[in-house]
Length: 319
Image (cartoon, rainbow, N blue to C red; front, top):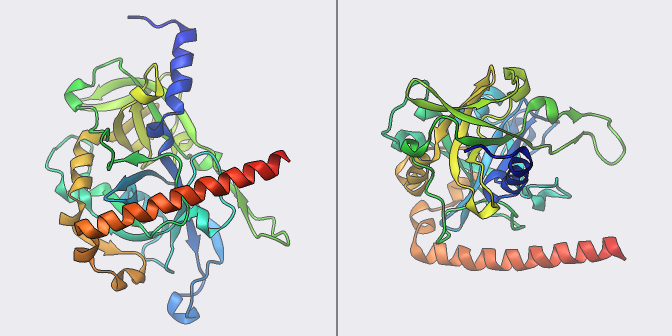
């Protein structure tokens, strides 16, 4: 069935505003010229990004970033400080202070829990980054605690010509500038790139093929980003996959239907420490029903405080 261009554009606009598409977040890395041991405290000389995207997820009343391990490996070999990277909490804006940011604690190697196999896909590349407790409530994310949580579009349901959406943060569209003004030493933009194409197959592996030319340089930085279907209404949009790599107008992705069960079993995976503060936590206690319920109450409070803060800020802007 052919869809008129006007209707297709309407569907695209509604799809791009969905929680699924907007769950993509930019990863921003930090660099310090001295080790944390030498300084004795956290410090970042430089904020930079060679590119990288993550998918914001809530599960067990915790917030996580799903991304590709190769994104992290490309930016640092070992953490130079407690926060070698961070992300923004809001899909459509930057941040005013550290309370608007999410900082990593642990990296869970959930790819090792996936038994499915597909050519050109490295399951060990899939990592779930556990974030420290947040002080603001995010606006767009994949909520796996919801009764309407996504399960991922089954691979068998993907077909050639199916319209798909990709969202992420290419390096070239998200530059970091260093004006060294009195109030700040760098500035950047939060520019999410959203584009659509059609499902195709590389052997038995589904891929997204763009209509126009898309080089690796144009898409570099979108690894770890979101792939969804294109639907008439925002609440119909489903999670299809996480971006692996892209170039020559073709984007490879990890199917979400394989990733979601692994996220739900993340405690069975091995992990590595990013922030040494995890040594103060107790995983068994944190995963208890009582702890999950406690976090639920905490984030209900944080949400109400965030809503009140936003309402006050809007009122000040309009008066």
